[in-house]
Image (cartoon, rainbow, N blue to C red; front, side, top):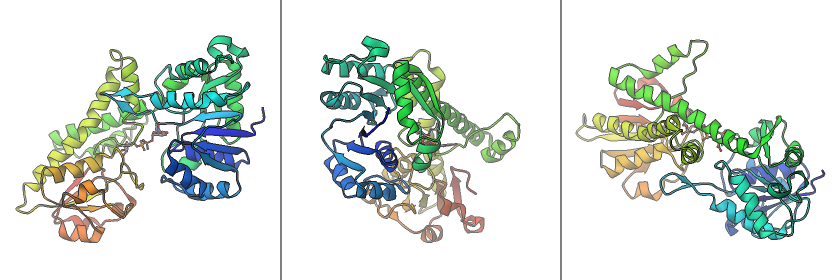
Length: 412
Ligand code: SAJ
């Protein structure tokens, strides 16, 4: 099948780069988003999110007319749904954005269309999306009713790109193609082949859904193991970084890195989708989440103890982002810890975050200051490394000799 026009629903961290990459292959792409601000920004050839080099690609495809954004869905050969699936009410997945997207595209569907769900979703969501579409379009048949002969094809092809490397990984990574029928998978594969260099691996929609959740839960469980080790090591007065280095010399051992907690919008969220679907069975997955979620509290306790040594504690918090060398502060354990230090008035707080120019208001209101690294190293008596940004790796150990150092990332 020749895709002449593709519509991407949801122009966020996944939808926008995907839309831009497809457009860069010469295919007409219409991006749809409920945010007028996002739509206006994109139509000016600019971006409303942060991702290396995305601005260049978007500018180029908007200028050539291959990418255009709108708030109202229009006809297309294929629809790619990339909307958020957050957690609500005590760790339950909220798939209402998918329902809203299905209802928005239903009126413009045409026979032969392909609808792909890319959003990370609990098992069974692709089938639900197909049902919402079928309820809105009784004039068409869908795979759950007509199998291979359906008028509309539906598949789940989860995104799996790493923030910071999205443009490379969109093209290079293998894709899981979970069609609701063989024909759905075949058509979805044809679409991804237009821009993916990796392999397209075909399965069914439910396996594709759980596969995506498995990838992030696997990482969460492994980080939880490292975080638990770091807490054990604190108790036993052993350097966790030395320990991991030694254990990792075993040919079949690869312990991940402990840290101040797990942040971001995926790894700290997706495992809950598994727990929600199989609460009695997903014991390890749940415990891993709890361990990672409790790590900021453990770090905070260490900071409090360190600060108690000083009459006037001046604490330098190095890093606010959720991981190294990005500016994304959302769901960041570093941000939570810094906020708590301020909230509990543990000491004066100097923040070094080389990737931002202004601090969130919640921090400045409590008296925190964003300072240069040199000033923080000169004035603080307690140094807390919360993110392993490249700038912090260059700090000479001599500069830290006279300080109390809490290095949650094993930088020095
Ligand atoms: N972290 C550690 N120790 C480690 C590795 C990571 O504490 O050894 C922490 C990071 O500091 C960060 C959090 O985990 O706070 C998550 O960072 P990450 O780099 O592991 O992953 P994300 O959330 O940026 O992206 C993940 C990726 N999933 C996997 O690697 C299995 C990405 O491929 C997914 O596409 C993305 O989630 C997503 O959108 O689901």
